[in-house]
Image 1 (cartoon, rainbow, N blue to C red):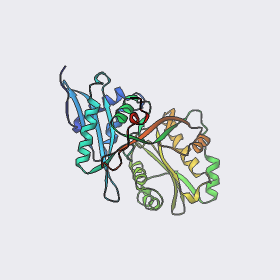
Image 2: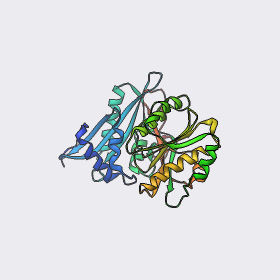
Image 3: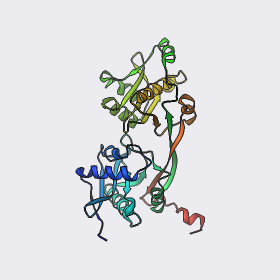
Image 4: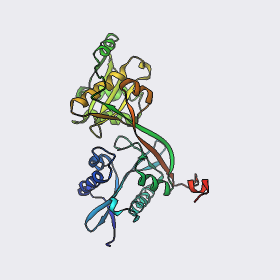
Length: 313
């Protein structure tokens, strides 16, 4: 059998990686778009080549924190199933870890680094990825879920609710170019920078949608859809001082109705919570679940792996 060559990912290879994702990431809709999503930011990428064919890929990035520390992220790892059990995934991940470490990262995470991420973490049903993460020393840090909404069966009319909000001086509408600038300035004091970045991307995108709620000159709510993939919804938020008025429900339903009108049958609320709110508001049900992983490379926090804790293997 010919040998595997690991090399840096070139931009012209993204199409091949996208086709590999479409073939292997069977739980994902529009899986072929994932490489383009995670490379919209500065990135490090590797490919595994055998006989001129792309049989694996690994893409990551670096996030700088306010204290000057750098955190590495592995955003995508995919291997052709016909080539598995040959150590390709482990080689790709190990080399990317080395490159991230060389650039000053003391921690590497397998979790979403917005706005250009495909998942909150590792889908619990991608068994090979979960096993590789845990066998490679990554520790579970939590679990996040996405929720599904049946757009053909869920009532999405908002006229009465919008009339009630209008009586309080709150306007809900689709954002446009005139909001670019005032919207971000209004949101920065309340919302984290990564969310403001996602909202900005949605506002400036020709494919995504963004609805906003505004009272006087202040933006008090927002909801995005289609930012990374057309069926996805998020982020969504309502100013803490304005909650309980139904603003979030109207914004969400306006986005969902627009997705339905574009021919989408099921929307996916990404990295969502509180779960009970969305279950009540739009009959959302829990869909995919993701484990968030991280590995401390500084040596300061060495946690024994699960095999040492249970003493069975």
